[in-house]
Image (cartoon, rainbow, N blue to C red; front, side):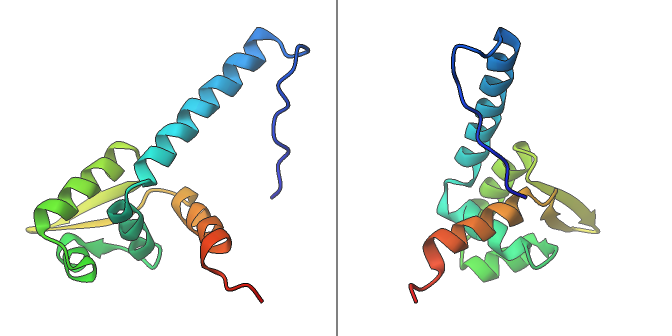
Length: 114
């Protein structure tokens, strides 16, 4: 779905400008949340499905404290959802925004020039 970018000009009402500013603030918070390499890698792993904290530690070759800290930030931003099963905690993507963003990042930075 291709959406036109908003054009900010003198014709916009104060309400329209406020809506654009609100959306810009939300986008900025989202980009800050994914701007850390560790958080970005966690999201990459969660695109394939739910993972336990232990699985993420192994996949990232990272300490539990570091993984938990990054998951906490992603949870705070509403990007991941936890689920407890016994002593294990599992995480999954909260919605499709991270997947869509990762597809865009892949397209911009990872595809070879042909």
